[in-house]
Structures are given as C-alpha cells and as structure tokens.
Image (cartoon, rainbow, N blue to C red; front, side, top):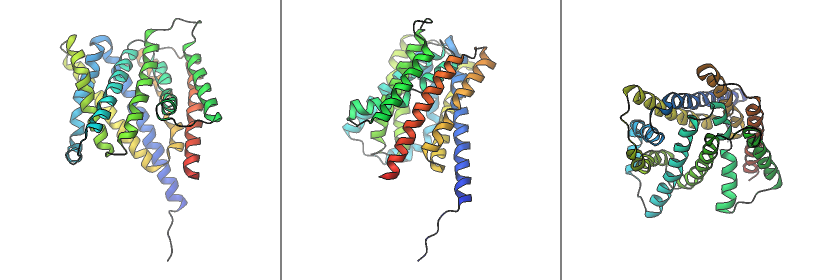
Length: 297
C-alpha cells in the first residue's frame, strides 16, 4: 500500500493562500478601526458597542442550525456569560480608546493581547512558563513602555482604556478556549454575539441617543468587516500553521499607521513603531515556541 503526500508545490500554494487570507484579515480589522473612528464621539461609547453587536446578529443566521443541536448546561451558560462580561468590557474600552488616541497606538497596545493571555493562563490555569517565554514577556512589557513613555509625555485615559481592553480580550479568549473544547466554534461565536449586547444593553439605554442613518450604516459596516475578518482568519489557519501566519497579522500596524495618517492626519510616531516592533518580536517568539512544542508532542 502506498501513501500519497501533498507535493511541495501544493503546500506552497496553500501557504500562499493562507498568507493572502491573513493579509485580508488585517485589512478588515483595520477597517473596523477606521469606521469606529469615524463614528467617534457622535454616540455614547456603550451605545456604539451595543449597536455594533446588535446589527451584526444578521451575519450569524447560518449558525442557528448548529445552536439548536446543543444541549446547554448551567456550566456552559456560566462560561458564556463570564466571557460576555469580559468581551463587553473589552469592546467598550476599545471604542473609547479609538476616540482618544491614534490608531497606531490602539493597534500596538492591542498586540499585547497574546502576552496577557500567556500571563492569564499561568495565573488562572497554572500553566508552567519557561525562562525564554518570561524573557519574551519582559521584552513585550518594555515595548509597551516605549509606546506609552510614562514620565516623558502625558498618559491619556485612552491609553489606559486600551490596556484594559487588551487584558479583557485576553480573559474572553481564555474562556473561549475552554468553550471550543465542548462546542462548535460557530456556536461559541454566536453565543458571544448574542450575550454581549444583553450585558451592554442596560448601560447603553441609560444614556441613549437616537442614532442617525449615517451612524447606523457605519456601525453595520463595522459589524460586516469584523465578521469578514474572523472568517478570513479561520480560512487562513486552515491553510497554514499559526506560527507562520502570526507575523503576517502584524502588518495591521502598518495599515493602522497609514490610514491614521491619510484619513485622520495622525502623526507617525517612531516610538510607537519601535514599541510595536518589540511587542511583535516577543509575540512571534512565543508563537514559534508553542508551535515547536506541539510538533514535538
């Protein structure tokens, strides 16, 4: 009996598709930032976050069939709403940060998310961490300090909000990682998209302002690009390993700085680029090490 293996040409073609899907993902997520920036202070932050999820529910209709087949237990509901709390906090802080600080700084500070995930896995789940990963965490932390430059410039509330957002996104991801072991990924995304607006709704209604048609269209497009971005990410990971694609994801910083400069007149801060590069290097190293560990297992 002979075993056929994919040719080198087929593997290379699949890898290239993965890279292209990843590039498309970065553009989609940067467009989300651009649209949120355009909405700006036109609506209260909580209302904007609420409407972004509410309008995005239309894209989850195909997942209804999978949701109907799930037998929900109290534990699953507890995990789901715990994740919703983390994600609602993350989204609200992110929307606020987008109204306060340049897109490049938002994107760079958001790159700290995998670092917080690593720390959270150690603190919450007792995962062991070796010296090389600790070194990478220190480099990423220093990269964050280069971006913020405390003592050399005023720290805006938007910076603190974005740091909290990245931490909350990490909490959401860690819980999602537990949920996907018991539920299809489409169901996990559906539950998040339904429960987050439920969590935000009471706070959004306290300071509700009637949105204009233009604002509704922008928030609908925000939801559309976010959905497209997540779809592109899943297609990319189906084509190539994450260790190879992770560096491609960091081109989002280039798009963010470019769009911020061209559309909003934001200056190109070399310290943000340097700090972002330090964080990118640390995250890429951690991703590479994880891939090597899995390959040996």
